[in-house]
Length: 96
Image (tube, rainbow, N blue to C red):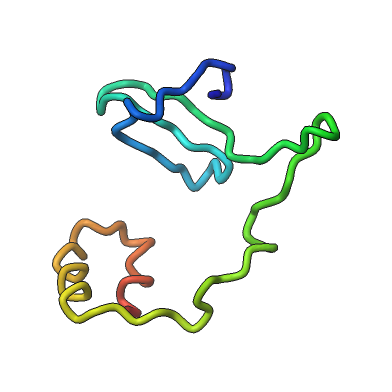
């Protein structure tokens, strides 16, 4: 269900959008020109009305805290796309 209570068609979804300003929101689109349906990603505790779990990152442990190696062909492929990566995300890829 989206935030308006409407059903979501996952098989028809062709685009997912995340926005840094809305960390608990996901917008699903069925075409690139459509407005999309917004979904709230906060889990609701069904036993207590109005309560929500915190998934803000403070309680999430990294799966590979020291990183994980990738193959040379994969690294080369990623580097070929560096011009498409937003500047605020490049630090991650530069450290690979």
